[in-house]
Image 1 (cartoon, rainbow, N blue to C red):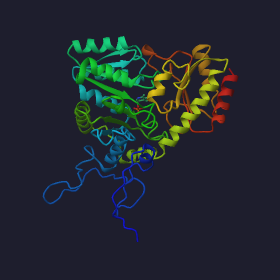
Image 2 (cartoon, rainbow, N blue to C red):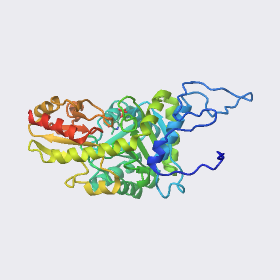
Image 3 (tube, helix red, strand yellow):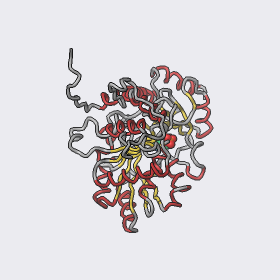
Image 4 (tube, rainbow, N blue to C red):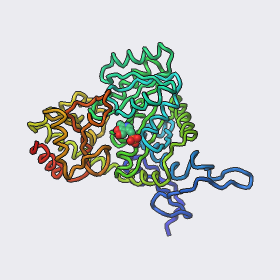
Length: 407
Ligand code: PLP
């Protein structure tokens, strides 16, 4: 009989880690699916200690810890330096925006966030309505303009603020790509450890981009999107690097997680873990389909612009080629005729579903200007955002053909 006591063999390929995410069978719990532990409280030993390491579920829970460990390992998986650099840590939250708020709260007060001028609209909304009251100020900035970024960082540092450079790549919904390596180097060159670099990498999950390996201190994902992958769970994660800045921020984020308590339920953690196990193949297929759809839309006479980093005409195509393994499953395009025409196009969707959110198996279309706050619309009026799903590309394209023909 084969001995089962051989040493565990190290695995570093991200696809392999994903396929086994959260699975830790033991002789006591031999299941090959991650366990859901709904307990809110855990047994103390006779001496008062907690042998399991868990006390109360707002502080930590076995299902959440499993998810956090799995996600932390993905951000450096496959790198030749992953065994020599200090490992990252992750904290999971009940949504992407709860995770974003934890990063800002962890750095407040007297914190200044230099934010992309075309950032996902929920982040500036949160800054205005909540964070400004907690001592967090912010400046919108064009992250493709190095002198503007330099100026924003220097001005903030000169005011004596704790400065945070917040990147989002690709950006929602204009698909602008920020050069994470160059901008991290710039920020650290200006302010050293006084500038914290955060990347919202929701649109580029770790099989596509690993910002910590490009010099960022912290990564945010709305796990509601590609990680969950089935449009059935809200979750957010913050991953901080093992360096000094990342470790300090990670500890503060963990403290906010415990004290504010915006944590995902054990079942939500299970759903995200289940999503992770197939994420690499889903993302791969979405990227293939997005490339085909982008090529189709570019040649359509009623389409005036297509924003997709995989197109050679995209202004940051070359940067995307360097920092993204694939060009992503998100794109946006503009139709001639403004809001009314764009709304008409979306109204003709059939297989493609007209709904917000992204990163699920199904293709979604949304008119963005109509969901953005009226005083801060960043999308052109004729812009439609598409989350490209994992259907057959020809079926997706057929739906777009009909949508565009009928207007
Ligand atoms: N970041 C980005 C780039 C997003 O697109 C979203 C949501 O669409 C969020 C953060 C917020 O995530 P959640 O909806 O899980 O709070």
